Image 1 (cartoon, rainbow over the protein chains, first blue to last red):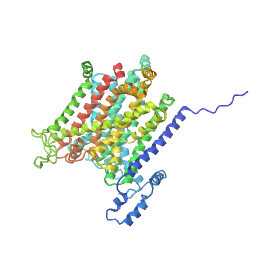
Image 2 (image 1 turned 30 degrees about the vertical axis):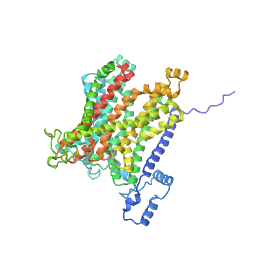
Image 3 (image 1 turned 60 degrees about the vertical axis):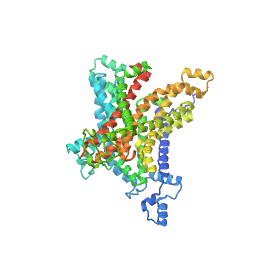
Length: 326
Length: 278
């Protein structure tokens, strides 16, 4: 008698992905509800803010109806989130343009700056971390660890101010803030982002150097590294080919999880250097009571943190099968 | 007790951290009864001075003494550290204990709630809170404290889950001791060391976060002295008086380094796994 055919087993990776994706969607929904609810509770009438104190009750009522402020909480929430999902974001009160377009234009500053900061962080931390691990407890290691402690204790914006003091005020090699715009002056724009990205990157590098060092030390104690050495491979091959690849997995994870801190740092550093990025936009929007801008940018940043965490979790599971089995 | 102290002080991180943080705490305490000058009194004749015998750290744009303001800024930073850790610790430990004890749906719900809070870095929470309630030191502390809740909740849950599975807890249950009594007698003492270590490190992070928020104008409001706010004011006068941009930053880095090293030292000494590795 033929055996009854069993339904094909769902691969562990797919099951893990679906489970994580559902959690991600729920979390994004909760994030959007939180942002909306907090700003919904805000005292003050946005219509009044737009029209000023001399507006007549009729014009106020008209504008409230036009902005949808006279609708219920759920109607306003679903109107807002539905608009975002279909590509129709709210209008900025102050800039009179869709917030989505505003975010895109400002990302042209924040995006490259964050990317440059990450490049600085990786370029500084990997060699230093490997160097410190190979000289564990010797002078070189202790010196590197001392500087990473200093890095962890230094506020990014203070480092930004010090760099400005040195390179812009004292040596006059850079401008003390501002951003000419990519199309107007590409080199100038790149130069304008160098110091703030360096300030952001060096602080990230302090964390990543410590992590690379400890991860490298763990891997260097593994049996396969001993085997590689026993086979007579050159030390350089053992460290850079065999050990580094495995040591990098936790480092890459933390690199991804650093995004939240990087965005938080960007908000402050953009204000130090007067850069027209997302951080400065949201900061100015608070002062101008431009709520659609505050709401959409906070949602954008929080959603970015959640999505990157999801990608990191997923990538980690793809690299390490033990995670998805758990 | 003497043996414990000897063990702590034989650790370099702890000793160095203790000395650095002691200076900050002592400076804050002294400033409550004495500062070289009134930190908020303006003196236009002495404005933007460099370090001198009468003003060891110089003066700001209003002629206020920087040393006196750095000293009172220490009080501000310590209050922020204490309050934010207290908020995170109280709510986080309760949530973590509940998640570890009840498991299943409660655990899942609390963990998703902490995921939600994690999505908002302190600056973002501060922006949200400030938009609603306006900028103030209390709102900045609230923002940082809320960000700490998931950190302490996850830590408590992880450690408490491990302790609940220990044999001595099973034995205590079998002998008829109530769940609350087990939590009080066995679970809490076991999670105390990791909480103390994490609390010290988050104390340092709070000083950094408050400085950043005050720099943006979302934290401590003028004329009260805050190290972050002082750096904001210094930036405008950087050309004329670079000193203004140096000392408040040194104070922040000093305090954060001190409490970070103290936390590292506590971990080296109190965490048995670390001791075993050594």
